[in-house]
Image 1 (tube, rainbow, N blue to C red):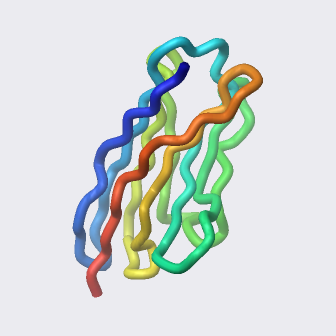
Image 2 (tube, rainbow, N blue to C red):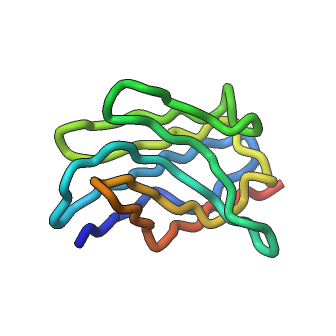
Length: 116
């Protein structure tokens, strides 16, 4: 069983910044990739960013390119999402995702609210 611990969400004004973190713990087999998805009220969950433990990526959704930066701590199975120049349309619950061995795991989600 793998648990994802997310932190860093909150309320910020448009143009501000937040830094999300996600750490995978528990009985991991072999982490292959980690990343973030988000879901705004009334919307489907969508891809934000991801990075491979084998060297591919990071990859970003077009809507966040140039504003968000994904980094990793390979040893600690942790990813960080630096979010700059935030816009009200970035408001969503952000969910951490990990590919571990043959399975996919999701965090509980952390709220990001950007005021206009």
